Image 1 (tube, one colour):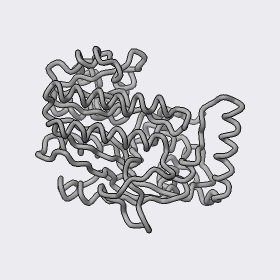
Image 2: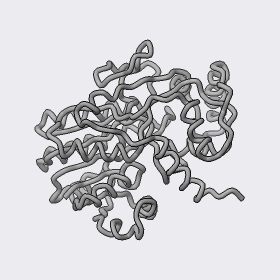
Image 3: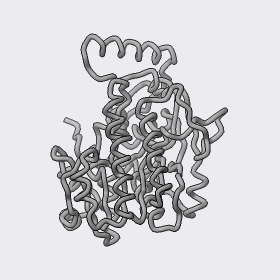
Image 4: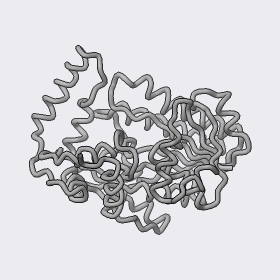
Length: 337
């Protein structure tokens, strides 16, 4: 039996489908308020009828911060994929981020130790990889440092330390650090907001850039690493380094919108996060733009996937085909009036 946390998210839902296609017996935890229909909808993008696989999932109601629920979920489990995480860049959410990303991961690790789990795969982020220097590609060995780090980055880095602790307690682990993950179905969060932005034919693009990866590649790599003899290592998981202009050009082209052709000035970004801070202060709402996110938008990062490619002899899926597939679904779900 394989246990998956975060099964109702972009990576988790695609991972569940991948495991089921491989004939793996799967148990997935979800919170009471989770919408399981979203997972079945993701399945329907690739398989018809989607219930053929969806009905094979053993769902367990559990919160990663509720130990008794997790203990039941771990019964009879041999491997664990820990995909659950809270994503927020609002400094006011730090305590909640720490609770979910760090303490929740510690709980998963502790139960892996006590249940003699054969292997744990943890989905981290390139936010936990040290910055690239002088346009040289960052590797898994780059030192991570806190200046300009977002609260999300800080908690994902701390969560990795919990996973490494598990490796010291005889739990074989692999950590993946994916870039911005492209895939269909989650249009209001993560990379889904890029599709939303592209559909509005933006005139401006941020000056920075990052590493990008198809969700199909992420889950393929996860399952390949879990089947391999590799353990107690981390891998940057990106297929291409792209500027934000380049990714928005690809998305607008796929959605048949005019591409952005003007770079947002640095001074505009600096003003935006200050205005956002002030507005959130008086309106008591969540931050949309922070100094850390502006730093990320201004500075292009480059990441190396050499270690992963050499270890798995891996060939990545076409990002362009992933974008076309995803935008086709986006257009179907967001028809023009």
